[in-house]
Length: 82
Image (cartoon, rainbow, N blue to C red; front, side, top):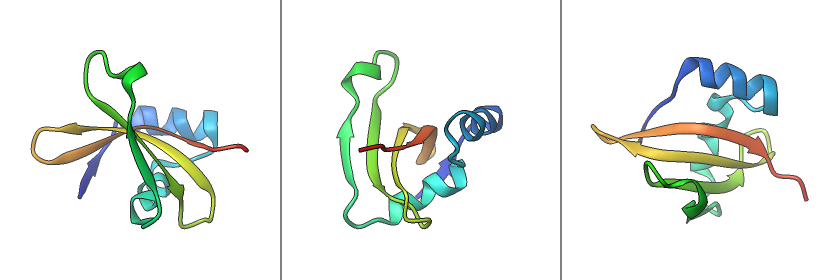
């Protein structure tokens, strides 16, 4: 998989949610992660939520969509609180 994101959005996400997009990428390596279509936020584009553990053992929710050229675009990432 090839990933992309807006650097300004990545900075804002780290500041707001304490999760870097680099860490968010590691959730895609979690074989037990679950993915679901994000119907509530898919008006302009199809968005998906993947929930799984990062390489820092934190459970994260990562919002993403697909872009031309086979890219996965990271939109946001945050810790899941129980």
